[in-house]
Every structure is written in C-alpha cells, then in structure tokens.
Image (cartoon, rainbow, N blue to C red):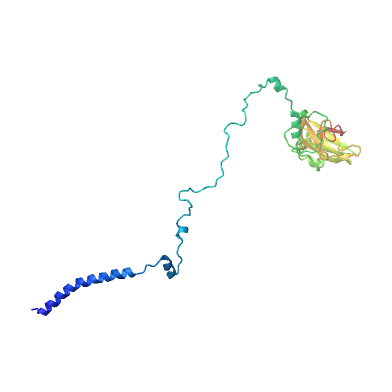
Amino acid sequence: MVSSNGLKSKTLQARISPLAALLMMALAVAACGEMEVQSPEKVTAASGHPKPELSQTLIPQLTDANASPKVNATPALAVDPSPTATPTPFRPGPTPTPDALTQLKLSVTWEDAEMELRYVGWKTDITRYAVPYSEIKRGGPPRDGIPPIDEPVFESVSEASSYINDHEPVLSVELGGETRAYPLAVLIWHEIVNDELGGAPITVTYCPLCNSAIVFDRRVGDDKRVLDFGTTGYLRHSDMVMWDRQTESWWQQITGEGIVGEYTGTRLDFLPAALIS
C-alpha cells in the first residue's frame, strides 16, 4: 500500500523536474551573454607570444590586385637573316700537262741525298772529294765490320809450320833489315793490319775481291803524321775503301789515294812486298 502523502510527493517531483530544467537553460543563456569575448591583442598579451603578421607571411603585397608582376629582362639582339657576303662560284684550274711536270726541278739530287745518308755518324769532310759519290757503293758490312788488326802477334817459322803448310800464300815484307810474312788466311778475315816494321809504321792491306795485297807507309804530309786505318764497308770498282781514324778521310786501297775528306788527293807511299808461298 502506498499512503496518500507518498503519492502526492512523487507527483510533485514529476511536475517540478521539467520546470527546473527550463529554468537552468535560461540561466545558462544569460551567462553566455554576459561572457566577454577577448580580442586577438588581449590573447597575445595574455599568452606572451607575438601575433603573426599574416599580411607579410601569407598574403603577397600588391598595390594593385589586377596588376601583373614586372620582369626586368634585356631585349634580344636582332639578327639579320640576309647573307653578308656573296658566294664565289667554283672555277677549276687548268689540268697539269706532262710538259709542265717535267719542268719541276728538285733542289737536292738523289746523289746528294744518298751522300748525306751515307756519312751519317761520320766526321768526314764530305765537301772535299776526288771521285763521283755514285761510284762508291756499300759492300755489306758496317764500318770496321771486318775488324783490322792493330797489335799483331808473330810466331817463328818453325812455330807457324804446325798450321801453315809450305804452299800457303803469304805476303812477305822486308824493311829496315826485318822480314815478316802475313798469311792470306789471316788477311782475308781482317783485310788491314796496322803494324811497325824496321822502325817505320806500315799498313798491310788485302782486298779479297781484287786479290790485291799492298803495303803502305802510314806517315803522310810534311809533318809525317801517322794514321791508323780501318775498313769503311764501302767499295769503289769492287775495291776496298779504307778510312783513317784521325781525320776519317776515305782512301782507295788499290791506289793508296785519299778520295773523300781532309786528305783528298793525298797518296800513301808504297812499300815493297811480295805475295809468295
């Protein structure tokens, strides 16, 4: 059972609750109307942080909203498309004729060029010569490729008889009371022997192509200058051409005459010799 007082109390609460809610809403609206809205300046002052300058950082500064930005540029140079020069037409020259080609002259002849190449490495005075250079031919070996003998060693006849028989040809030379024999078996491999015999400097020469065995006195000129001879590696008329180590003049073996160089025209003195066996 519910008492009548209790029922009245619940009915009163049910009627008061909607009225109380309406009253609370009215008070809240009034409170909002009385709230002060702070300006951006006050917010900045209260927070201590500077207010961003939006007009400088976000919005471009234009005096005229419809104006276009100005660009300073140098104007391009004007180019004239028309040509500056008149083209020259091609005109072929005359065709060379055989007669015109034969008139071409070389300042250096083949003989001169060959002469220059021949004396490369030599100190020979090639401006002085007694024979045409065209007559001097290369024999094959280089200078002293056939080595001369400068200090010959001799043996007695009895000692040499062990390897030289009675029929072996030798070049016999007698001078100042001394006699020596130069076997052709030795001369054919060396061609020149610079020696001294009877107190005189001599050169014993042999050219295998001419089979010419000749002995000369090595002293030349008024001052009796002693020369040492060697082989040039060249031939003239198939005869050996010698050279001296003092002036590098070239000498014809069969005549003993200087044919190129300082001693051009000088003749060596012949010494008596005999080819015997």
